[in-house]
Length: 230
Image (cartoon, rainbow, N blue to C red; front, side):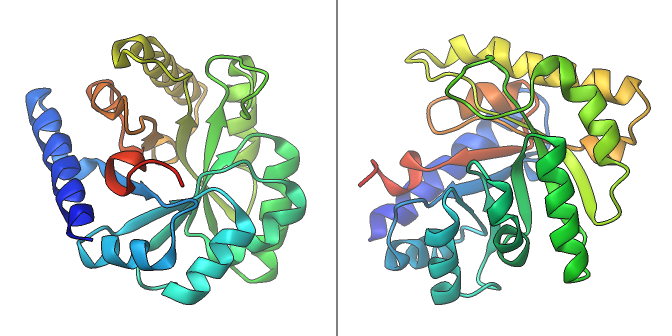
């Protein structure tokens, strides 16, 4: 599977070139390899090729993979919709949860993290396009929710995440990335500590270049590394 290594090198080069072209430090941008539906052997190949962060969407599938590959082989991020009744598994297995979208879910994650004396790192997911088919907190509720999350003892808010609609032309996603940056500014203006808004998880295989130009610190790339979904 040398093509995985080649793909990974190409994505890293794209991140590097994009960051430099807009005056950013490439080291401030973290690549998350989206490995959902991909077999263990393929993920191991990517890790061997230098991928350090894996993103998974489904709890049961992820647990099996992490048990097979190892917790310490890479950092593991949960990037799919999380139900409250699966929060304890997410806390046990994942370094960062990108998809906290309600006070109820945040409260349950805090509860489960407290049971194992962990401070769980999370991102607040915003439904940036207000799509019925997408998860995420409503834009006008973001400031209040962020302030409430800051009160939980076992949560560490790290920033925001969004998932714009898919566009054939990546430029069409730019306005959504700008909106997420604006929401972060509103949260900071409300007094939330800057460390809690340090990360912006936005951009995928088709539009991560535009996301980096608009300030992404985490890009979630699957197809460009692992190929089309199985």
